[in-house]
Amino acid sequence: MEFEPDPASDLALPPGCEPIIDLRSDTYFMGEALRQAQRAYAADEVPIGAIITHKGRVIARAFNQVEQLKDATAHAEMLAITQAESVIGDWRLNECELFVTKEPCPMCAGAIVHVRLARIVFGCPDPKGGGAGGLFNIVQSPSLNHRCEITSNVRFDECRGLLRSFFGEKRRAVQEE
Ligand code: ZN
Image 1 (cartoon, protein in one colour):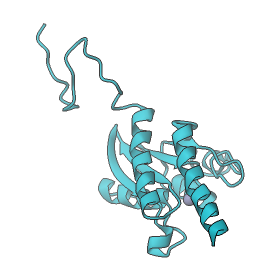
Image 2 (image 1 turned 90 degrees about the horizontal axis):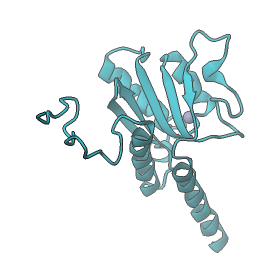
Image 3 (image 1 turned 180 degrees about the horizontal axis):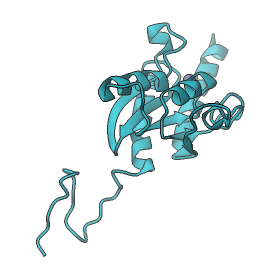
Image 4 (image 1 turned 60 degrees about the vertical axis):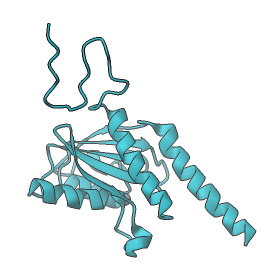
């Protein structure tokens, strides 16, 4: 049988030569969100990154920019949602999935319900302040008009590790002052 590359992927490999990572997996897409979180870290922002996919394709990428934009609403999820709406040409993102390194806060969880995202995937849960099952579960509230699926703890150690080292550095800087 002749090897025919998968037209959906320019990285298709011949039979018997399995790719190391599945380019459609949650693990892979969380890697893209982690790359955004690293950009936030490099910009001295709390390292949280988010991407949005539509039918297995990344359509939005963003990282937390609260300090840079001097805007408390400039969370990675909010910026990614705005980008995705403009790509889709609609405020309804019901065929989209959001990947974010940390559980969305209540503000972002509210936006996720408003745009009707199909599913959210996050790395590190936030039991103290999360809006997707941590403190509140806004994205699955029976009284709101939309509920989305949740997948959590994807690449947990890497997502949490970035936040820990960021805040660890900040604490050390304060002690050295
Ligand atoms: Zn948020």
